[in-house]
Picture 1 (cartoon, rainbow, N blue to C red):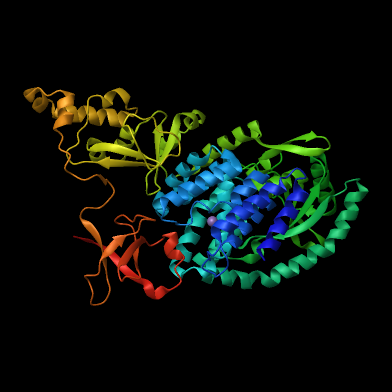
Picture 2 (tube, rainbow, N blue to C red; picture 1 turned 30 degrees about the vertical axis):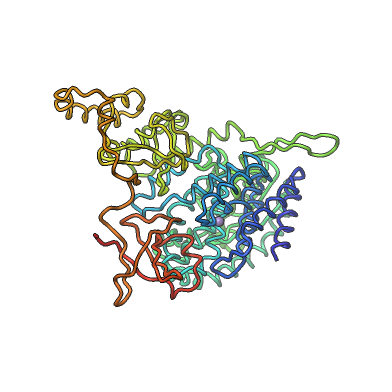
Length: 592
Ligand code: MN
C-alpha cells in the first residue's frame, strides 16, 4: 500500500510540474520509510502512511519537489528517540543526503510542532508569534497544514479527550491561518473536521438537515447548466468549467446562527461556479446571467475589483433562476480559482530553466510583490484580532521581521527578542530572578558564553545558580531595555554593599561559591509528580526525558517494565503511541 500511495504522488507531480524531481521524492520516501520502519500510528497503520498522506496533500497544492521531499521527511527528527546522539547523527545524515534547504525545512517543522497551545486566552498571541517565527519560509507552515490535515482526518483513533484538544487547536489556530493564507480547500476541511469533534450534536443534526436539500439542489443545478452554457456560447463566452460546490458544514452552521437557523434563507447552500478564460469574460458572463435571470438586489459582489483581504477574487451574484429558485453564482478566471483553492501556495511559482530539451533546474522563488502583499495582509489580520494587546500589533511593521529574532525555550515557548540579543536578554525576559541568577546558557544543547549573539530559531536553556549575580560587564552586551534596567537596578541596590567591601567584578566572580549543582531553571524544586496508584504512594517517579514535563502542565504516568513510573506530559507524542492503556496511571504535581 505505501508503494501505491507513493506512485500516486509521483503521478500527481508529473502532471502538475513537468520539471519535478521524481528521484528526490523517491529518495526522501526511502529515507523516511527506513526511519519509521516498525513504527505504528494509533490507528495501527504503519507510520509512513501518515508521511505519504501529508505529502499527497502538498502534491495537490502543487508545491515544488523540495517541499514535497521535506513533507515525506517531516517527522524523521521527531520520532521521540530519547538518544540525542542518534538524533544528531540523523540530522547530519539528512543534511548530507538532502542538502541544507530540505534539512532546514524539516528542522523548522519539527520545531513548530513543539509550540504549545495554551488554550483560547493565549492562542492569538502565540499564533502570531508562531507565524512570525516561521515567516522566513512559508513552506514550513504549508507542511504543517498537511501534517495537521491528515492528523485531523485520522483523529478518530485518538482518545476522546485528545480529540477535543486537537480539534480546538485546529479550529482556533490552523483553520484561521489557512483562511488567512487563502487556502480555501484546507480551511474548509479543517473546520468541518474540527466541528464534528467539538460539537458532534450540532454537526450531525446539520448533516441530516441538509442532506436532502444538497441532493435536490444538485439535481436542479445539473438541469439548468446546459441552458446557461448555450446562452454563454451565444455571446462567444467559452466557459472552461461549470460546476457546483456544496457549502462546508461549519461555515454553513455559522451562517445559520445569523439567520435564526432557517435553512431557507441560505442561498449559497450549493453555489454554481463558472470558470472563464479572462477577467473580461467574468463581467460578460455576469451580464449574460443578469439578462436571463433576474438578480436579487444588493447581492452582487465584485471581489475582482475589491478582493477580500486574503486575496480572494470572484464575482458573486444571487439570481432567481428557472422556476424562481434562488441560486448563488460565482464567476472567476482559472487563476482566481487556483488562488482561491491553493491560496499562498499559488503565489509561489517555479522558475524553471530549460536545458537540452529537459528541465534541468528548478528553483523555488517567491513572487516578491505578492509576498509583500501577504505580509501586509497578515498585519491587517492581526489588527483585526481584538483580544490581543494593542502595542503588540502597533509594533508590527515590516522591518519588525528583519530586526527581531525568535528564540525557543526548551519547552517550546517562543520568545521574541531584538537582533543581537544574548542569553542574558533571554534570561531577563523569562523572569528577573532567572536573569539575576543566570550563570550559563546552553544553545541548541551546547554551552555558550553569555555574550553570544543568539540566532533566529535557536533553543536556549538558561542555567541558574543561587549565588550567581549580575556583572557590570553584562551592560556592555545586553540588547533589551528590560535586561539593562534590571541589571542596573540590581547593581544600585547592591552598590552600598559592594562599595563597602570594595570588591572588583573579578573578586565577586571568584567569591561565588560553586557547590550548587547546575540545574536548569525550569526544573521544579518543590513540586514533584506523585502517582495516584491505589494503595501504593511510594512508587518511584522519574520525569520523561522526551517531553520534560514541568508544573503545572497536565501529566500522565507510564509504568515501566521495572515497576517504576515515568511521568510524561499528558500530550506527549511518545505517550500517544502507547497502546497498552493498563500501563498508564494518573499522576499529579504535589509539593514535596
Ligand atoms: Mn506528522
